[in-house]
Image (cartoon, rainbow, N blue to C red; front, side, top):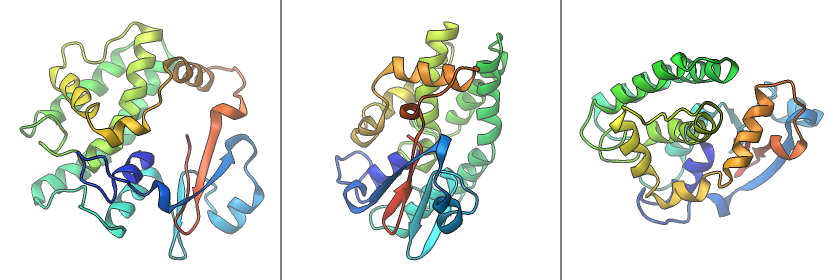
Length: 227
């Protein structure tokens, strides 16, 4: 999701925009062999992604997308409406539960947990008119969820023969609408086979290759991200 917020910041959501990609320094890391300096001098939590800006280091993807939206130029990716802001925070508070349900399916044989996760998403999308989580505009709420759902859709279809849009017209319309946004298309993983291979390694005992676990740290307009 941090890739997407960087692509959208400085631009209107539906327009091409230059984003922040050309204004930051990306520092690649390796999750399996993270350098000691990263934990000692940059981010004691030793997690990625992280961003260093104005002498301050911010971690955790959801905190990062809010920070970038609040501290860089360009239109905000959150609406002014108080009800929608509250709904946004509610959605984020359920993120760990949402991911946990899907990952439980990845680890087992039943898709009942995935059903619960995507049924909840379908309900959330019904709250406002429009294809996105907060209505007609693509916002931080969508940025938080869509990169995960994009990859889940591929993996669940390939490995479980499971269509997460089946019986969920609002989820289907949401994905279709997101696919029309240039900044989103620029950040999507393009190779479904790569996505399937990565998840199979994560949720099995197979060793992970260095190429599959790249990360990034951003220093002073520098970002560290997991790819």
